[in-house]
Image (cartoon, rainbow, N blue to C red; front, side):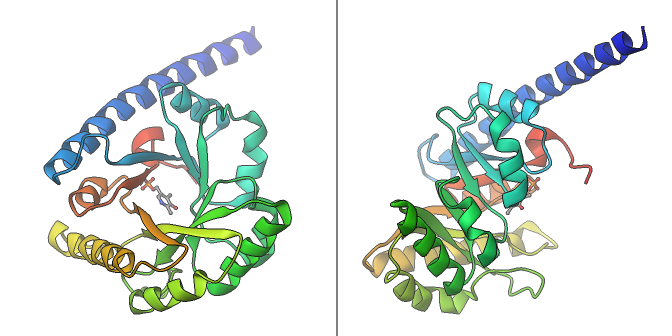
Length: 248
Ligand SMILES: *Cc1c(COP(=O)(O)O)cnc(C)c1O
């Protein structure tokens, strides 16, 4: 009896969350298309990543059934423990959280792209481990756009110089930039950070450095993805607006 009612309530809870995920995805996709067009681009110019940290595989798989084709996880260990349960056919997986050099070996080959490269040292290790597997790992350079001590990432003014160093590392290909702006008082202030990122992205591309392509400008999360798109983001990383608030 007890077991049955617990089960029923889990089924109800699951159905409710499935429904929420569906509705949230619809709303977010509409907002993304609208902002892309407003920024002078095609409706489909911006890629939606579902950020799945702390989310149970059953709900991630539902988002995938609803058309999500790109997911992002922050922590190597969490990714590896959930991966066997994920239905990843046709789904691209990126690492978006800070990566310690000693964890590189575990994650190379498990994700297509590491968005959170924040030092030459970690880039070299990703290159080395990728070469050992005979693959190339795509990387984005994380920029500490607000110069915050609490955040990792390259200093804004140093990114271009580091690109020349990255260009020499085999086993990786630099595909773009990623940033998390500081908490801002208002949208004007926030958009300034996104604007500066876009400027750096365009400036680096214009230098035509060997092995360095500026394809992906990854910026914008649940609270600010519309502003990020209006300033030129082409990949937004959205977690809580899809799956609900994280409890831990
Ligand atoms: C958690 C996280 C996100 C998503 O944050 P939400 O506010 O839940 O949308 C995006 N990017 C990174 C790097 C994150 O760690």
